Length: 217
Figure 1 (cartoon, one colour):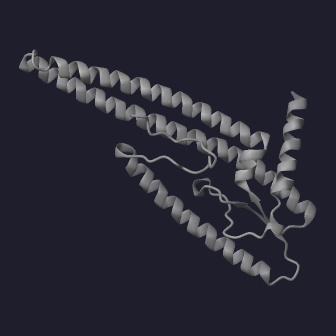
Figure 2: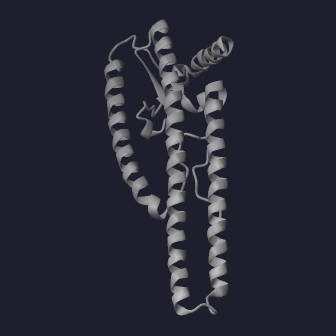
Figure 3: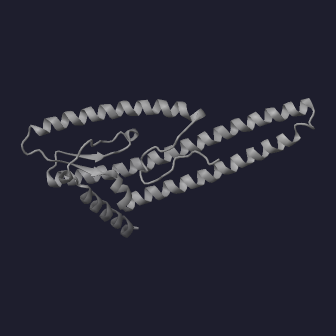
């Protein structure tokens, strides 16, 4: 059976895993907190945009975060790092599971020839190894989630800096991030006209920034 770990697919910022057992409780609690934050963020944005709509020349835009991930050096680097972490964690969990399965198979073969005392000890060892495996899977899962959040928060920070430059230079009242994970506590766009999309400008800034960083090294 393959380990259930966060998979960094195209929508890297989405939590695509299907946790169970020991992990489910903490994920469910965190999800409820995230949804509350999401609702507050949406309400705030709607109120702000309602205020801006009263101003004849109000100007606002949004940045498509998925395109930032797919089309900028910074986004590609973040995805590559997460993919490596995913691969390493998957290998580690597979090895741990194989070790446990081999022990279980050996116990199954020996159960009829072991004394009651020896069998009882082996069964206790089996339960201990099972608990250890569950703990290890949980640690790998939470480590991947922590890595995901750290990488994306770093990228969101860079996008915010770019949004400030675009906003100040071109007179925007507000620039939002489109479809970002609530756990990052970032902005949201529930609708955006293509004319308000400033993603191309943000990508251009980020590519230029990446080139400058490479030249300075």
